[in-house]
Image (cartoon, rainbow, N blue to C red):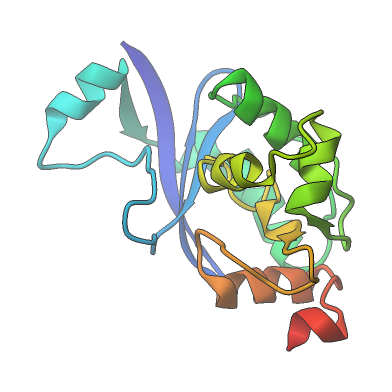
Length: 179
């Protein structure tokens, strides 16, 4: 059974649960999730879930420190790109979408339609939305940079207030987005 090191980091946008394998960051989740939103986080009342998924968690602030340090730098406005490795786990389509999200430059946004075109599925903007919804590594895989085609904020696992705060931090909040 695989061991995932984990910790909870108190950030300016609230507590963030983080987990990493030997290969890189596997999960970065908001403490507060929308109903039905996917999570990797362990449920202490259901140890069977860990066995079924094939991994268990080991609380380890020390092992998670490189990830925490870069997130602290990001929230302080001193980091625009993350240098630690990621261990993204998903379908081929999800992975393509998440790579397209990583390619969105700091301080910029893209629409769901833009991402659909970037992954070769120009009519697949709803599927892109579902892939974003399943993004296991919030902030680092910046699904907060994806907006509606009309330029307004829409859907975010951490809530629109957090999406707005992240875009403000990055200087990507335009007049339309701020409305």
